Length: 218
Image (cartoon, rainbow, N blue to C red):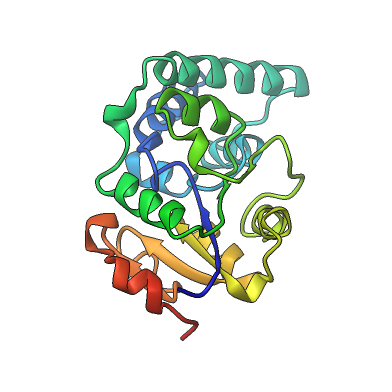
């Protein structure tokens, strides 16, 4: 099996923390008189906390002070972390462990490339942190997806050329970031939303080990 770098997003790919982000963002938005829907939450996938709050304020046509902005971001993260601290291995999405174990057994380099600043905490909670040779998260990057920075850093840490890296993403911004880095993009989720990806699967139950052996840039 040809050696490649496999880079995984976290939220919505390895674990479904989107539901916790939704609850925390909804609570925040409602507290300042803004409605917040599941559809809007989809638009925040792969987007930094700062940019997410900016989007919510724009949707509600609200302006707040810098100090209030900082307090809201802290409050949102505190609410989110209350849920995260209750996480366990049961929250790992179907067949993720099968795929990770296969790649590790094949001595393939595996990295995490996530906007989340809580990535290490989550991986520890679900007992997966040892599967990753490199972890690049929101504490390591200055540019949010669709900028490819997070994936470029991950490839460098794995010692792999970008064209030999495969990215698993559930967000439009993440797929665009992978494509911008000239990596193979594998969308996990809705084909209509992730149509820019090189390959699209509903979830990891649809991904075979043969596919991982044969995958190439379309």
